[in-house]
Structure formats: structure tokens, C-alpha cells
Length: 150
View 1 (cartoon, helix red, strand yellow):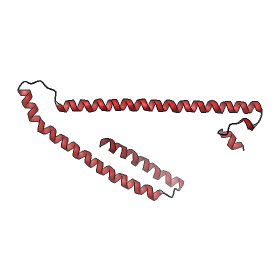
View 2: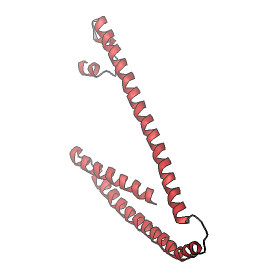
View 3: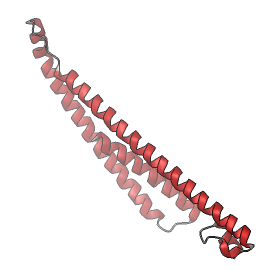
View 4: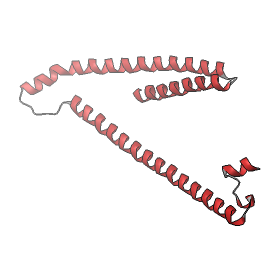
């Protein structure tokens, strides 16, 4: 549920940006975006309530286990607390998810840089060809100069 809350927060920020952008561009869909923002705020409130209930339920369960844990320790048994194991598992999963996200972001950034390099090389070669040809005919159609000069 926490992931859903974070996703909803991200959608709220995007919607708020869209509303601000609509004011600048005079987008006629401004009322629709405002309605969507209201719905997202309601959804976020519901999700936050569900997260709070689940956390409270988990805390109650932990408190119920404390006397048993103390009795086991008092009897001399050596064991790992299930709460500690759960916490370590959550931390491990979050660390793995973060590592995967970093890998994907690094790959995406590299792909963007590679694409930009390829585009610049293409534009550069088009400009060189146009200079050698002495005219605009050699400029590539996706060159910014081509559309500005025609």
C-alpha cells in the first residue's frame, strides 16, 4: 500500500503541474484536470487510511507477541525475533528494488546520451554535406536549420 501512496503522490504532482501548465497554455481541459486532482486526493486519503490501519494492526500483533518472546528468552532459548527477521527482509527487498531501479535509470540515461550523440553526429554530417554541396539540398529534414530556412 505504501508504494500505491507514493505512486498516487507522484500522480498528484503531475496533475498539479498539468493544471499550472494549463493556465499558461489556455488548455480547455482545465476542469477535467481539477476533477482528476480531487479524485487523486480522495484516493490518497483512502490509501493513507488503509496504510495506517495495517500499521496499527501490525503493531498490535507485535505487542501480543512480546510476552511470548520474553518467556522464550527467560527459558534460555536462543532464537531470532520474527519482527527482526521481518524487518531485515523488508530492508533487503527495498535494497534490491533500489538497486534494480538504479540499474534501469543508468541504462535509460545511457540510452538517452547515446541517442543524443547519434543525432548530433547525423546533424553534423548533414551540415558538412550541405557546406560541401553549397546549398540547402543536402540538409537533413530533421535539422532545425532546414525548417527555418525553407
